[in-house]
Image 1 (cartoon, rainbow, N blue to C red):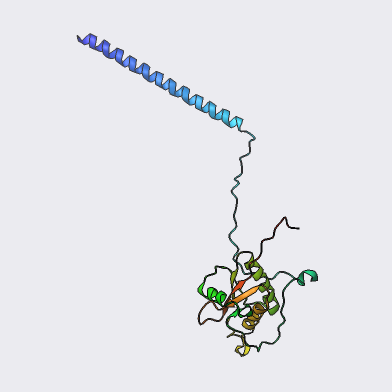
Image 2: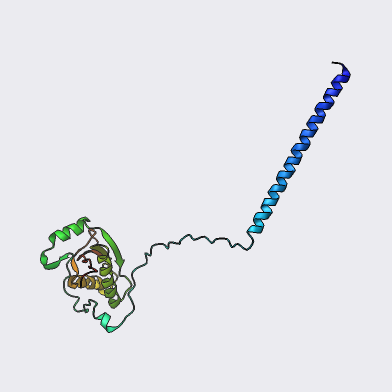
Length: 209
């Protein structure tokens, strides 16, 4: 092949490549125009449409605040509350207690941790009347969830004359409460709390007359 033929061949090849580039550019331009048209159509179709608000449910954290006494209500409701007067605080209050002396096994199980403690309450800072009301509500609270709870009443070392007023009152209340079967001190050498065993609440039959 002579020089002239080589030039013709190169010219044809260059022309073919230029045509391919033009076709590719035209195709890219058409594709871009189609995409812009689709975006515009979608935007127009979505005019006036409100975005959906998220419906993630908020679950509040568990309330660990201490039980507070409910406000005083009608006398008819107050009559249903168990209440023991202050009485004499000079009586000796035992470290353990069981109904009619028949609950030795209950005391052993309380001391060993056999029963699950389903709730606890600290009675520091309450007046005597408030403390007894909180105690009533706490016992009812425990009965809804199990049979064992723990009450912190303190050792009374900060009381006037070092007389454990709240400690004595709480334990005397527990001894008199009809739903308390037994109590004991849960921690050795620490008489500032008691663990209680209460009567199991019977399930109510909704179909019973």
